[in-house]
Image (cartoon, rainbow, N blue to C red):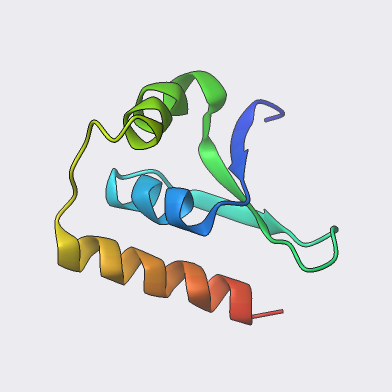
Length: 78
């Protein structure tokens, strides 16, 4: 699927995890950067990303912390 949503923002990726999005892989082709690739398309991700960018959303804090820990594990598994 070529239209999968991608981001290198670890906090946005963690936020999307808390919203039920699924990371299917990560791209490490750029030096010192991990791009998180989601199952969902850009179109499916757009409302959640806009909510995040415009600070129009809330998440349960412990769930968000858990998602950040998951993202950090992905980053550390180079």
